[in-house]
Length: 467
Ligand SMILES: Cc1cc2nc3c(=O)[nH]c(=O)nc-3n(C[C@H](O)[C@H](O)[C@H](O)COP(=O)(O)OP(=O)(O)OC[C@H]3O[C@@H](n4cnc5c(N)ncnc54)[C@H](O)[C@@H]3O)c2cc1C
View 1 (cartoon, rainbow, N blue to C red):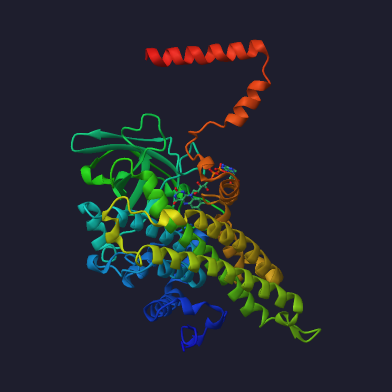
View 2: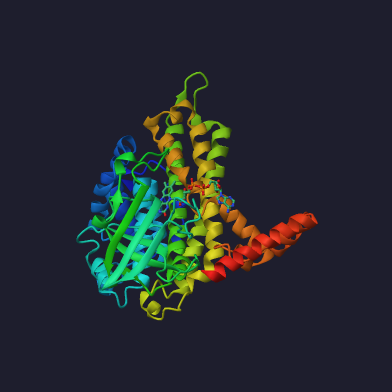
């Protein structure tokens, strides 16, 4: 039987462990969770308020997390890390978002994604191994820089990027429209077209870039919520990287996306949205059980309407948590509990098979957080609308869930389209022709229009052949 949930010296004022799926955690993970809740109470939560008010990057929170060995959470023990699993990563992100600071939880999610991308291809790369072995000691914060200003949330399509082979290494150019921890991270995993891509945008490569090689302007960062996550634009302009700057083989980008970047982002960001939803339920419990209406002699929590709000919020959020933990457990089962040695075989890609499940997990968590934060604000009335109670901040933070790529509009398209028509129609890189649409459009043309169209195509082909 686990001891009661504490908040410093006091019993925790929100929901107790009886509403948490503690049975998915082993003793080591429960112990880590208890230590992390204590750290949130002592340090992270106060910094969350500071980050939100002043757009302050939560480096202080990362320093505290590093002392607990959490920057190397999924790094194998032989490299000095904690050797933990997908399940534990989800629990840690949820805990940071719920009891501590959602901006930190999002920066930490991106850090885990970058760490996974590094672990995926660390076997023969001394630069990656060097970072991984010093990650906690030197507080080396990593992040992922994928989104491109030309292609919006289609982060798998980096048009404003290029890489070329040069003597002793690689010259890399990239413009990124958003990068969590941009200008503050110590190391970045970025994606560009491959040196030999020849117009084929499915041919992508990953690179390791260090802090001093990145141009950022964090002073201009602004946003509705997650204000500490500093997700501004960055650029990398003609930087020459050593051989070890290439992460994995040339052309490894799509594998890296499907096998580590997406699985970790989708699982851990979903845990972040669940943590935010739970944080507002906790606050609503605390507030509505204390606030009384003297005319009727009742607490706000005594109204059945408020009980219904809270009941539904718990049911929906625990459904979302179950989804995240089930997915994380499945990833653990598929990978021998996150055994990175198995990836020495570069074609070992078990997580990729789960991707369509992870799309669903993220969609559900990001949808739920918007609904729950809204209802918990209603349950707390005008007091919830003011910053003091902190629901207002959490509601703004949770809004990032829906719009972060893959956005929820894109995800439900992916799921519906692939379920109805097969995975092959997803066509991420616009490579397959939709013959139905093409034939239908041609049908609408007059004879002269068809002739002009055919002539246009012919001259295009002749120009290409002559080039
Ligand atoms: C807080 C925050 C942190 C972020 N951190 C990072 C980061 O660390 N690294 C990173 O690489 N990126 C990051 N991003 C960027 C994010 O992943 C998206 O790329 C970004 O939010 C897209 O914004 P946009 O204005 O370009 O949207 P657009 O892509 O222009 O979308 C506009 C609308 O069109 C819809 N839409 C787009 N494509 C389709 C389609 N195919 N079908 C149907 N609807 C579609 C969208 O869903 C949306 O409703 C972050 C974003 C936020 C908000």
